[in-house]
Image (cartoon, rainbow, N blue to C red; front, top):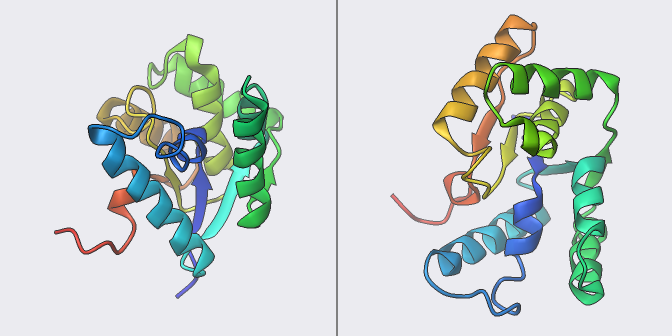
Length: 167
């Protein structure tokens, strides 16, 4: 079996550090643990990690330089390949927005899904429940992908794809 190719969306880089950033309460505790478990699975070779220029741009917009450096170091430490956001990616992202899968004001979120799709990855791992890991977005992006001749792409939160003992 081939190692699944996984797109790591911006929220996982942030959530990896939630415990040390004063955000460790409520559901954040579970999400932080799931993000760390996911990165451990990447390190163990269970997933082939990718992200995109769109994620790198978002990470670089982080005002806290220390936090920005920590997140960028994850890209290096886990040998995460950054995919280009090319014309085909931008075009497909626009199709998602036109279909109502992702709001126009959240174009970067559409770029994440489009990057993973155009580059033929197996799935996206995200904690963005507002625009990406959401039934409407999952359904409508799948419909657009089918209409445009792309394979389907799984969209999951990290706890759904790691072997963490949950049932």
